[in-house]
Length: 263
Image (cartoon, rainbow, N blue to C red; front, side, top):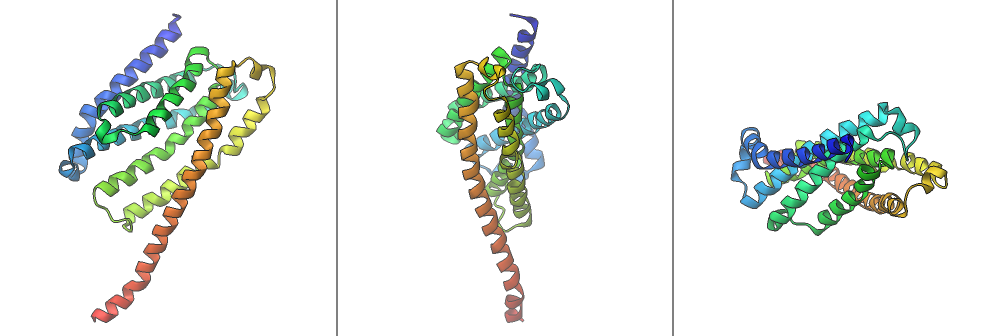
């Protein structure tokens, strides 16, 4: 094993251990101090709370790293299929450690956070990342996909508000809902033309045919499937956001009438 591969393996293992530590130690300790409502949650809710806290941390970490690579990593941006994958491998190694950690937690706490969809999602992602970490191919596209992680914190925050009993019409909940819709659209929908234009640009080139068949399936097949789901989720999020905002407007318009009756 070459030194760089050993480094990537070390990063993945360190990532796995770190996320386990965050779940079991850091999240419970921090949550009891930031949100007193954490103590009143059931054991199952605490498991999911800690899982989502770790998920948020991972999303922000790899999302920021991903954005840095897209903006400043010239070798990857110039050659999206075979460019120098050093930084991308590091970011993907962090995510690989997180995914394995999360899979272990899902299986161990299946009654609390078990979800077949997440198991399939994690395994599919690990399969795709094998080609990045093992062969150094498709670094631009692997990194670009991590942009989607920026929508995760808002999705998790929505669950936090719900389990703490915040009304859907409350200002924090509505603000988070609007932010979730906007960010989800920006990092999962609006970027599609950029992603697929780069894919189209390399399709049929020599670099493309150097990618093995399995790598092409992991790249093109998973991209299309994920984006179909993203469009469906965006539709649901937009409809939910619209309903909540309409409900809030109706409540405001009714408020003066109710006050008048009480007077």
